[in-house]
Structures are given as structure tokens and as C-alpha cells.
Length: 252
Length: 320
Image (cartoon, rainbow over all chains, first blue to last red; front, side, top):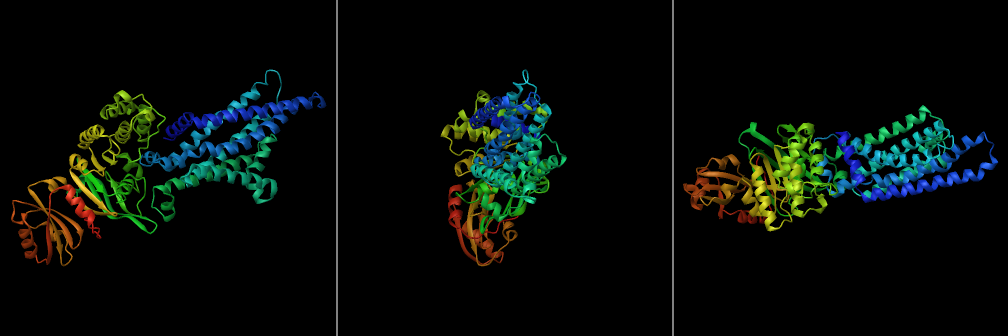
């Protein structure tokens, strides 16, 4: 059943003009970042020794292309996911899911996977930009793969945050705004704080992926936080059809 | 009211829905058997849609239980929802999909086996008169055809219980006739609840009628008893509270409906001694009840509707 909902969610996005415009704009931004990274490397190439040039271009691509892509996706994900639950509840389409023999976990998993597949398709197109360099230039593929694993995990985390907020309100724009605010706050926490705040910030865990280190602690962070967020979302969806509370009545 | 408990397809008991301090539904009981088509009537804001959402499991009740085909909606939700088709007043359509794509998705959500998907979807498309439009995008269909798609998604898995929330809303007279005929066709094989503002629609398509006023059930009886010219309905006001059983077995009484414990609607056969105001008054006094008023109610749904919605008094609902 998860597969049915995920496939439907993906088809909804593929038939939405908004999603196509967002995907096109993201490709434009990614292409711009890519060109800027290659251009900066070309300018600095003369100052690098021949041995450093292979790792030099990889580092330039990660610092000036892949790392900024995570920030772009942090902005795009809430916009692409805001309708997942909030939009359906606002339009009345959620009644179809709520009256069908589905568990809350199936609904959440289906919507999560569907939204994630669409975003991964956008990211894959950005990978093709780097792949275009491969026939002529040797790149550190392991380092690049590690950076993309980090980006993929970060997008999944942002999707889980967006899905949770989309389940908490009937207003998609509010859900997107709250998701982006929370992601931004967590991101900035790593810049200005240390200790616990830094430890819960995704940017501090993403940094090691960008440095080419595949650390199990970072993998555990992303999967663990994602699982907690999806469980909270499932609990919320479950509560919508269980005994009502004054808070729930207010949001209905 | 269901006579035989083994045939109950839908049974809702003591449904309360509170939104903060405001009660949207109070102590509402519903019971439906196969072949029953219950017309749910009430003014705007009376609680009709809220009741249907609770019965469909879309909104939870604050208290009370709902059983569908023997399964408790709160404890065995998957089993209960498998037997349920719900067409809300706001059609839950994905407008960007074609009719066939959307109905296939709805069928998959209802866990139809893969080998039955195509035949079930084709069958419901033909049944709902959507054959010529199966490949059209839903957004491009008229309102009437969108209502048909809404009905088709509720029917696609051939549920035993069908909940239709104002399916004739916004239809032109021709579409209205077509939808009425469609609902009459399908209602024989399902237990159906059909909410509407239109009394004529309920009279034409339903065999039972329930009236809700300010979140409370004020009438629940077979429609033929209400509209049959051979029957007479009396509004009876008593000095003291009475029980349904005190009135139910009076001679010639066909149905009894509580407005409150002192205020009742009694339907009798006109051919019996209780078929006139004096006769029913005598029968009540002979039963030891102190009578304050007996008023004949014309056996027409509109009159009963007007009378009951005008009397916005607290109501003790009968038990199924």
C-alpha cells in the first residue's frame, strides 16, 4: 500500500505545474553554481601543482556546488512537500485516505517516499553535470559519492521535517514556512553554538560527508532523527482519526 | 431502528462530538441493515456532515462507538473501512488525473486484489454512466460528472455500507434526476445513508428518514409510515416523562419517535381506533399517562420537518 501512495504522490508532483517550475528553477540554480565552481577552478588552476589538480577540482565542486546545493534544497523541500498532507486536508482530498483501509504508517511512508523520489530526480540531474566532466577529467569519485550521500540524507531529513509540519496544520504555506524556519535554525545552531545544539544541527553532521568521511555516527544521526520525525508524523496522522481533543477540534 | 442484530451493517451508539465547548452531535444512535436507504435531513449546521464524517472514520467522535459490518471502527479500523464507501460533500478528487486513473487509485487504496482492479474499475465506470468520459481529465468534467466520479470512488470496491453526503448538491434538474435514479439503483444492494437538504430527494430515494436538529436526532422512522395517507401521525405532549415501550404497544401504533421524554410523535394506522386524535388520547389515558396535548401532523415529510425543526427542544434519542 505504501508503494501505491508513493507512486500516486510522485504522479501528483509530476502533474503539478508548480513542481515542474520549481524543478526547472532548481536546475537553473544548480547549473549556475556548477559553472561558477568550474570557472573559479579554471581561474585558480595556474596556481595549483599538476598533482593537486584532480583533488582540487573535486574540492571546488564540493565546496562551491554540492554544499550550496544542500542550502538550496533546504529552501525547496518545504515548498515541494507543503501540500503533501496540509494541502490534502485543506482541499478535502484527505477524506479519501482517511476513509480507506490504510494505517497511518502506510500514509506517512507513502507520502515520504513519493516526495523524496521527486527530489532525488532533481538531484540526479545535477549529478549529470558532474558526469559531463568525467570523459576529460579524472575526479575523486569516492569523495563526490560521499558528498552526495550526505546531500541525499539531508534532503530526506528536510522532507521528514516538512511532512511533520504539513501534518500539523491545514495551511500549506504555514507548513512550508515553519519547516524552513526550523531547518534554518538548526542549520545556524552549528555556526553559533557548541555542545548539544551543535550536535543536533544537521550542518555539523553534513560537514564530514562533504570532507569525504563516511562516519557511522553521522549516518546514525540522520536515520535516527528521520525515524523520530516520521514516527511523530505517524502519531499525528493517527490522532486525526482517533478520539478528538480540543486542540484537534481547533485545527479542524 | 434495526430489528435483527445479526443483520446490522452499521451501528453507531451514543455518538457525541464536541468542538471545544460546543457540542456538534449529542447522543446520536444510527442503525442500518442491508437494503436500508436512510435519508439524513437537517438544516445547515445541524450536524449531518459531522455525523457522516464520524461514521466514515474521517473525524473521531468525542465519545461513542461505530461498528461497520461487525467491526469496531476505533479498534479494527482496517476491517471496518474495508466495508465502507464514503462520498463526502466536497469531492476528494485529484482533478489532474483522468477518471480511470483516479478510480484505479481509489480501488488500490481499498485493497482490491490486483486481478480484480481492472474489472471493478470498468464495472463502476459503466454503473455510474462515466463510460464516455473514462479517459477525460476530471478537472474538465462538469460538476454533475464530478459528483458521479465521487460516487464511483465510494462504490468501486462494492462496500456494504455507503455514506453519501449531499451527492445531489449543485446539480441541475436533469443531473438531479440522473443522480436520483443512480442512487435508487445502487441502494438495493447496500446499506446507504444519503444526506440532503432536499426533502423530495429523500422521499424519492430513501426508505427511512432521520432528522437531525442542533446535533440531536429528532426523528428516525420508515418513510412509508410517515408519508402513507392511510397512516396518521400525532404530536403528543404528556404531563410526565414516558418511555418508548409505554407507547410502542398501544393498539394501532406503527411507530413512535421521541422529541423529548414528554413530547412524542406517534404514527398510527387510520383504520384503527387510535387513528384519530380522540382515539389516541383515550388510549394514552387508558395507559395511565396524563395527556396535555394531541395535535395531528399532516403525513407529509415537509410538514414533519418544519414542525420538528421549529421545536428546538432537548431530545432523548431512541436506542437501536
